[in-house]
Amino acid sequence: MSAVGVIPARYASSRFPGKPLADLGGKPMIQHVYERAAQAGRLQQVIVATDDRRIAEAVRAFGGRVQMTRSDHPSGSDRVGEVAATLDADIIVNIQGDEPFIDPDAIDLAVETLEAHPDAPVATLVRPCDSVEELQSPNTAKVVLDDAGHALYFSRAAIPFYRDETHPANWLKASSYFLHIGLYVYRKAFLLEYITWPPGRLERIEKLEQLRILERGYRIICAKTDYHAICVDTPEDLAQAQQILKEYGVA
Image (tube, rainbow, N blue to C red; front, side, top):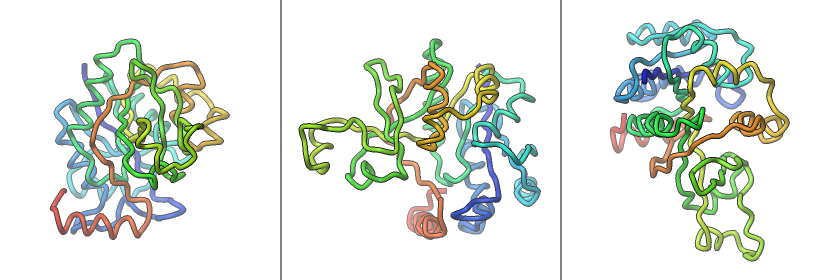
């Protein structure tokens, strides 16, 4: 099946305006994301989707593909969907534009997971939660799975709630907890349907776009991985990414 990666990128951000263009090791951050995504063996091409001409010019400057979109999209997947409508592909991969160290193997795993589950219109990745800080943080999305690996629910709260254990520090010892990695692999036809739906009630409450899918009764198949996504949401995160690049040369 043919698969295309689309990276939604917008300039406006309440916590970090202009972050796709933030300098990271002499390159704009969006270039790091693009170049690493392009290493995924299951993607035929990678495209940046943006509503900002400064981002578009930066992408063209390093030789990347870019497509302009509307500016009123409520989520990254909605922006990706606008681009997907113009593509001849079976599978569309929504790659977060603020993960400069995205693992190409993780992208391939997510694509292969969707291909292996014809009953699911969407695939994504989850990893074990290994710290109480992550478990309790509202900035991480937690997920509970059924026995077949389909998502039952995503939440910014710690789920499942361990009623008989009063100390959250012991929850990780008593049970398995998983964090969601924000990489979405859609069947193109489903994505084009998805973006016609208004944000759902749970999506609006939790501010998690994947809940729109579950609220409509569709399945999301999840692949387990040990890959730890590093997201740059603030200038402080960028400083940490600079240090990682300096020490390990990840990108």
